[in-house]
Amino acid sequence: AGAAMIIALLLALAGTTFAGMTLLATDGHGPLAGTFLAGLREHTVEEVHEFFANSTIFLVFLHVAGVITSSLMHRENLVRAMINGRKRAPSSDPVPAEARIETSRV
Image (cartoon, rainbow, N blue to C red):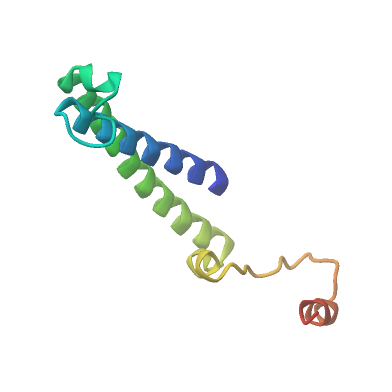
């Protein structure tokens, strides 16, 4: 679910960015000003940009709620794991703790 959320967030941000650059092009500014996108209706492009921006905000709130819910359900700090890249090993791990410590030093 986390990977799907990251892909959704990246797509929403890409849509917001592209629609924003297209909106600038309708005014004759920005990197897309000399392209066919400059001829699109400003109101339509503005609505698309607003849709993607609102979708991004919604996905961010959904992501934060999912992280909080998952952290509470699994009794682990996912925020810390996202920052340092390490998660606690599952308790049903067949490898003894001593072996994990030895292999992590290699």
